[in-house]
Image 1 (tube, rainbow, N blue to C red):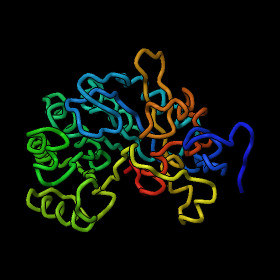
Image 2: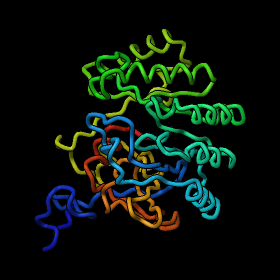
Image 3: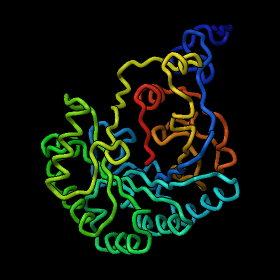
Image 4: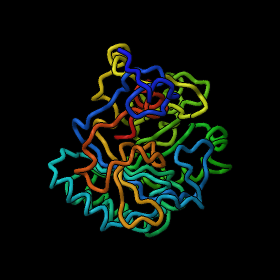
Length: 317
């Protein structure tokens, strides 16, 4: 059913929250089962990667460091709202650039949540204070703590083409330390290469075996292959009729089960976003509290189609 009006008849793609460019009602997703609450610990990173979706770098501080006190406030809100959260995720930037990351992770673990930290496992993680903190968390909480390592390709030359010369070797060093300290690891790769998914997983499996990493490359929960998010590539808008056409359930899309907290540079308080992938899109900002973040999310961005609906990907563990 087309929904045309004077105001919407000539809108372009992804311009109207409720209506697509051809006048169809835009798909939306309800927060049905909040399982994961993400915290972006800040956009500063020790490296600058090609096509980083959040433009993290050694100089990008558009998203400021969150504090442990702010994380604890949202952990309290989870309980107050009765959200059935099982997992607390920390992303960046590079989370280990934030000096309070160990305290943040510890606060979530003490509440009984699984904790997932996304990291490149390089120098910030390998500082003495971070290593001793991680080792202490592992001794107390075991496999409830998991680090997902960004390894764009198992071959050094391809990984380094994205993250800089020598980055593969430094990440491998960090992974070896995690292995030796019994800290649970998973890996995130990318699908920009010419390999099929089967070839990619087989290659990672050989790499993990060669280095003694206890990671199952054929388990999508342990070895994530993320689709690319090149905004220059045209993607269709997702209408309400697409769910049946694509045989995709709204409940399978990430914003049905997750939210992300960020703190913008200069802001007095953090805010809650609909999605981990859209930190700079104000229309996906839902409010400062989890109560405000319980509304429906309209899929009004190319990433919604490319990454979540058509790509079938999720940042959660």
